[in-house]
Image 1: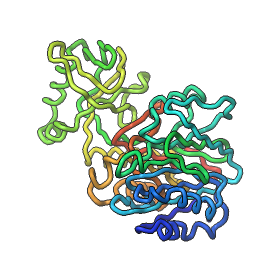
Image 2: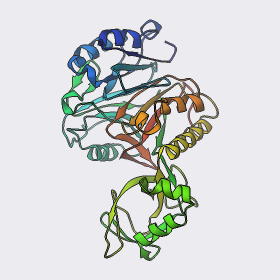
Image 3: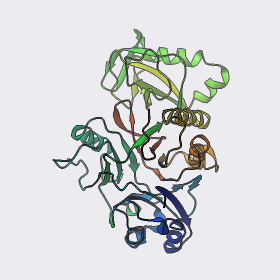
Image 4: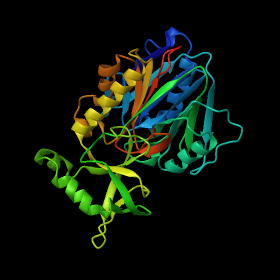
Length: 384
């Protein structure tokens, strides 16, 4: 192994799938970080599978979880049992593993400051938004990348992995300190439509007025002013973006936290959203569909490439919503192929999540229908 390596394997036998996934990894030297993602069809064998991977790879730390589908280099494997593995060599890196058992955990005291956290949690036993608040309170600023484990048949098949152990509930995390660096990407799969507006009245999760007018009037105007094709696309795919930085002169893709529209109050014209909007906040309506999601990811990867100065990252950890993949784009291996097209043929590993963790602006959020990516930079390289 020369720094970064990845592999995947498929088949009804977890042993055969793991053998194939580890081809070319075991013989290359010791890994410091190993990522392991296992299809939920292997649930009866998680303990044996993780123990075998831990012993054979022999990394300093192993982290991962179950998925209803797994992701590998240029491949999304959704419809058959599979294993995805990726290893990273960073011998001088400071790495902090963490296991949290509670649904609303408190982080242990005395944790060293980290530059980033990689986090996987069980969706049936963990409050994801609470979890992110605890990471923010313990160490403000570092990004959290990861997601909620998933499965085809519910809580009996979800699990998270840390080192040689399997946990049926709770959270596992790996803190990254000096000696290893990532560039986070969050692609929420949306394109802004219409124009930005200022919230002038808000109460709890209701936007009462925008630019001094009932919010639903502004929404209606936005739809009316779209061209016919875009208006048709937006009819069942409309969301709201809340700007995370009010000091920017202009807001574009990546500057908004995208949240669902939940309905409106006919008497007042207020719009309900799955967020807590603020008076004075800039908002813009958003369109989400396959075309918008493709363009959004392309632009985010292009921006990441520019920040890397044209150099290739070493590897990519990819956590994609289980509403993406073939269900949204068709059987085209959409997200990992996009990474290869924009950034080169780098090792990729990940899964289809039940919710994705990633930063927008300076805060971390739990997302849906999103692809969150940790690009591991090569030694001596840091994003601009």
